Every structure is written in structure tokens, then in C-alpha cells.
Image (cartoon, rainbow, N blue to C red; front, side, top):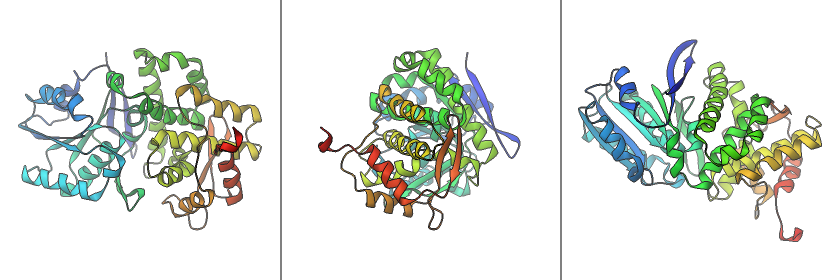
Length: 367
């Protein structure tokens, strides 16, 4: 049996998140949304297409009048307007109109790009998120953030545009490389740290089952993580306030990601950013030393880094100040008042950032 959560927008039901162990219920859910007999564009990437595109086409072929599959070249470097333009052309050539449907099948890059295409093609066409990575299932597919990178700046161009459905099939995680699974777990851990200390403790207590991808454990973990994000997004759908708490770990994390030219996985950079932000929280006496070290060390069993080599502190700070999350001269940080409770802070100094970067920088001198 599948499970579901309903996400509200402006105090009214907006879309459901379905949690299942297969794709078997996808056609039924799409039919119930009224897309029977419409054209469907499956937007995926070159890695995911051979795994799942044919399976989904087979399941939907009786439902749709026409199905096209477009595979974007895999990789963050292809998350740009040039690739978006190619998809627009494909939709125009196949005469897609506003009553047709886009389905994003892939990780966060595919979801963000397909959502942006849906938001802007004919000023808005319906789309469904079918996330195939843990990162996308627990974070990027929920909340309607869409976008592309521009001139090296992550998600600089985008729109808030809600899907009509998020369909999460946890069985796809069996084909996910270990590094990408770990990358997604960084966002799960973040949700516990900022909003739910009991969930954070549950993650620690269920470490083995999470590592082994036990199906029942995954359903609970992913649904709980989505529920935390749902509550934040419902309160602040366009990131005017509390939604910014979801950026815990991202301020320094995004800067490292850009400095490293996206050579590290997003979740690896988020983990480093979480450690740095927790360090600043400790130094401000909001966390105890024991809490800080537990947070730091809990990333390790899940294959996430807590230190990085070869970074230039001043370049990282420069990137942070030019990030879209910066507010004038101030950098918007998310710090932990305690485990399970985060707060926005605009008073973090460059010297505090330098100290945090020193904490997460591994040097050969230490060997």
C-alpha cells in the first residue's frame, strides 16, 4: 500500500506526495489528475533514461495520446539555459499545449530544470516530479523551487512553481551509487537538526537499517523528512522567512561547491557546511561541545565528509558574499540554537567564517 502526504499552498490542498515501492500506481494517479488522453513529455537525463524511461513509458502508453522522452546530458554543468532552449524546441516541435504534462524523472538537476521549463513554457504547463535520488526525494522535489545555474552561480535563474504531484518510488534507490545515496542523507540529517530532535535521534538509532536500505525504514525516513520540509514550505512558500531555515549548511556549502567547480556532490558540500555552521553555533555557546562533536561525527558513518582539502578561505568568503542568499553586506546564516531548533542570523562575521573553514580544512601538515 502506498502512503501519501498533502502539501497545502495558501491554506488549500495543492499536491500530494505519494510514497510507494514501485511505479505501479503512477498511471492511476496521473489519470485521477485528469491527464488521460493528453501528451506527456518525460524529461530525464542520460544516466537515468536507460534505467527507468522505458518502464514508465510502458506504464503510461495506454493513458497518453503521445509520449516523448527527452534526456538532458547528465551533470550539474548542463543545468543551463542552453539545454533549456533545446527542450523548449522539442516541446514546440511536438505541439505541446497548456493542457499537456511534463514528468521529471531523475535527480535534483532534472527536477529543477523540468520544473523551470514547466513554469515558463506557454507561461505554465503542469508537471509531475518523479525523483530518483534520495536528495531529490527528500528535498528538491518538494516545495516548487525550480531553476538553472547561470555563469557559475547555482540556481540563479528560476521560479517558484508547484508540481501537481510528487511520486516517490523508493525501489529506485537500489540503483543509486553509494556517493549519491550519502549525498541525499545530508539533507535528511539537516531536516532533523533544524526542526526535529527526535527524528535526529531516530536517524542515529537506525543507522544500520538506513545504510542497508531497509524498505520500511526508508519509507518512514523519507516520509518524515518530506513532512518536515512540507511544514516549512507551507508556512513560507516563497522563502520570505522560515523557509530560509532549510538553507542550514548551504551558505558555506554552496560556496565550497562553486569553488570546487561542482566536483563534490551537493550533499557532501552541505555536510561540510552543516559542520561549519554547527561549529559557529558551538563557539557562540548555543550548542555544547558534546553536541557539536556528535553532529560532526554523525556524518561519517553515512559516507559524508567532515573535512575538505585545498580551499582558499578568502575565495570562499568572496563567493558567499556574491551568493543570491546574501543580503547586502550581510550573509544570511542559519545557526542552531539547539538540536532541532534553527534560527536565521545576519551577524556572522568573516572572522567566524574563517575559523569555521579552518575547522573543516584538512591539511597535510596534520598527517
